[in-house]
Length: 308
Image 1 (spheres, rainbow, N blue to C red):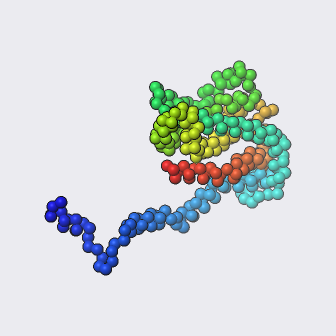
Image 2 (cartoon, one colour; image 1 turned 90 degrees about the vertical axis):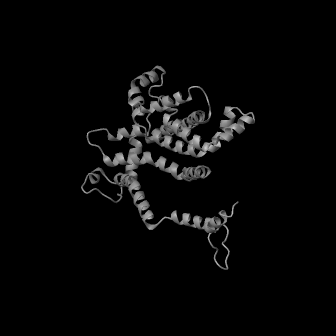
Image 3 (cartoon, helix red, strand yellow; image 1 turned 135 degrees about the vertical axis):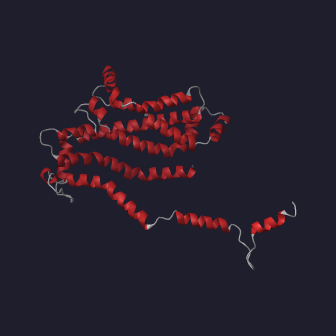
């Protein structure tokens, strides 16, 4: 150290306050306090959240209003904005005319099996594409992503012929097996595991003598649980609301909920209140699932964000 460097250091440090020593860590505490104030939500934030919540819930509210009136009142101008007295009677009519009991059981089986299989297979494939090294990995990942560009309508005819050859026409396996895994789920889990799963954990499992499946069940699954919960919810809702392929391969004797709702719109004069009552019945299981498991899903997402 030279003598010329001493004044520069003193000038950089600056004079201390007379009679008071600078507290250690005061700058860091000040930065934390400022950062906390930056994340504090103001009144405008709450106003925007309330507006977005109202806009999001309005279609459900309107469905309930339309389902609680008669067809004549729904068709009037202006339409009603308050619930009417016919909600439970319309729900009972829709339940009987559309055979909603069997349809809900079928939709629960289809959506549950598809969601579980998609989560399992997508997590397995995502782990392989993210952390395993094998020949052709990038080419296979490109091929998987490329299937997302193909419209599903192009494969309806050969897929229907395949289901007919297997003897699954008009049966639930014809809806389940073609959608046991999705390219979107594989890509989603691959992206999540690439960031959330450290390579050191996988290498530590290798050092301990664990094979790939043991690493997957012991290390990967606990890390991937938040993303798996999100993928399960998205896949379940999509499978529950899917209409096109079930409408092609199923008939009215063994329908899912969207297929069963088509029975309510048959005829020359459509009863809009009855159709809305059926749509409300088909939405209630999804709302109940989110009410029961919503807290676990959100807490899992937040836990994954904290770990990341």
